[in-house]
Amino acid sequence: QVRLKESGPRLVQPSQTLSVTCTVSGFSVTSYHVSWVRQPPGKGLEWVGAIWKGGSTDYNSALKSRLSISRDTSKNQVFLKMNSLQTDDTGTYYCAKHYGYYFDYWGQGVMVTVSS
Amino acid sequence: DIQMTQSPPSLSASLGDKVTITCQASQNINKYIAWYQQKPGKAPRLLIRYTSTLESGTPSRFSGSGSGRDYSFSISNVESEDIASYYCLQYVNLYTFGAGTKLELK
Image (cartoon, rainbow over all chains, first blue to last red; front, side, top):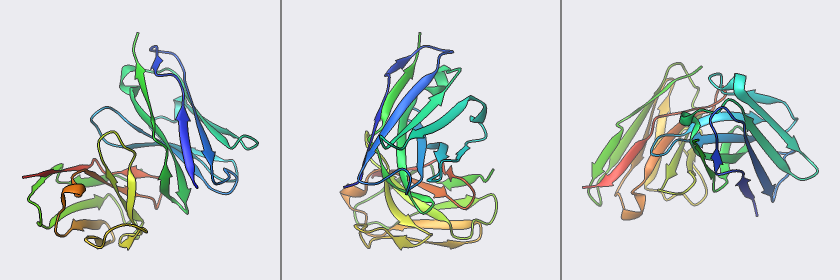
């Protein structure tokens, strides 16, 4: 059974770095691409970035300078790091498995608040 | 970057109505559009991929069509369980979501 679960801090201070982990089961991150998608409270979905099954990455051009996505294949985990956080980075962060190039399975998301 | 213009932002429908949501891409996306349903507090759920292919488990009252830059998503005979927000997603060149459409009961 495919499962994705995000974990990370619920509260981050402005200017600090967000680190979120996506732990997957039921598939290998070396066989399927994984993306991060975020959603500010009450607003729409925004693609953040992807790590392809071969290990390369692509990022949202608006966020690229602050982002890093990596993985630990031995633990079947994908990591999101975003630095220089501001209040408008507050939201729910989801990881999603790709099937081909669209997203078929999603984690439950982790709500992150950027506040001092 | 490809932009996706989704409309309307909100819809009010009665049970049994047919509703339609549109997404226009800033360039030809060659039918690489998916549609997602999201209920409050939940992750999005994939309903349709490649313009009109229903994902397993998607009821047949949902449908999609379009080509080039212009795409639509419809629900015939709206049911109470369809009350949710809906998003289009282009995946021809990285990813862009539409702004979303909130479907409410009239």
